[in-house]
Amino acid sequence: MRPDDWHLTDDVDSFLARAGDFLHSRPALHTIPLTVTEALRTRGPHAYGAEAPAFGVLERAGEVRATFFRTPPRRLNLTPLTPEEADTLAVHLASLGHALPGVSADHETATAFAEAWQRHTGATPTLHEQQRLYRLGTLTPPEPHPAGRGRIAGEQDRDQLMCWYGEFVADIGGTASADASSWADTRITHGRVTFWETPDGAPVSMAGMTPMVAGQIRVSPVYTPAHLRGRGYAGAATAEVSRAALAAGATEVLLFADLANPTSNGLYQRIGYRPVTDFAVYDF
Image 1 (cartoon, rainbow, N blue to C red):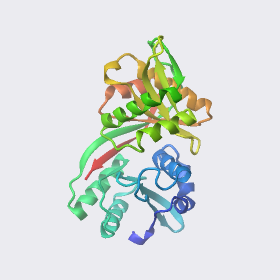
Image 2 (image 1 turned 180 degrees about the vertical axis):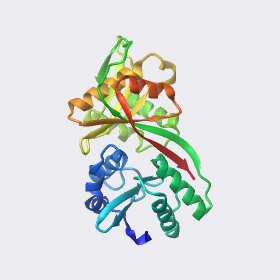
Image 3 (image 1 turned 135 degrees about the horizontal axis):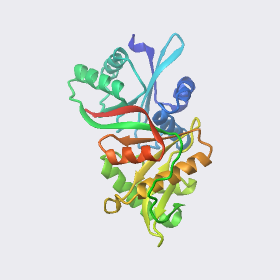
Image 4 (image 1 turned 45 degrees about the horizontal axis):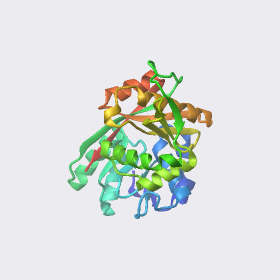
């Protein structure tokens, strides 16, 4: 495979014109690039920060085989690659002077690229997280069901959303996709966060969802403050937002869970989520 089989661009519309059908062909597996490119398309090239995004399409004999994207300063995100393809991409990006902080992809692809990046740049990969992608089968409300109810977060909840978003990002050791105020405003405007609140009206957990793209919605984020965990609130909030995603017409409802957290993985499976594939995240 030649490096020039990869077509690089910083324009999301050009990327989607070439790779859109490929990404839509497997919406669950491609949920991250689908949702990120939709945000860039609708909110502009600086939706995730001041630096321009980067995209790549692997095309041979007129057929798209794989893609990548990156929204600096975040990690490289890859669709599945063979070890040879991962190696060629690593050589190509290194030769262009790309300084990558890490990679995220399905487990085999991420590992192959991390090893190739180390060979060609000397950077040492460190496994940051292993995730499992789940798809909703039959939604089953959690039992026992905590007292309270679900409701859509509104303007009066803006400060709460901003606070919890910051806590969630810190909790997972992640990089914020937007500043907390714009993140909260977007989700309030579109009704994309559900709170679980106790009978006296106190919010105790939240579950959000992405916009629908290619018939799929991803549940994200799910967050309960540490002192309120273990009471079933996250399961109730996740079930409520999953129900809302189905009501919105999603044909696939997805979510990611950290494999280091058996509690959340067990919870999601109990309410009807089934494994799709495992992902890995490496830091360089």
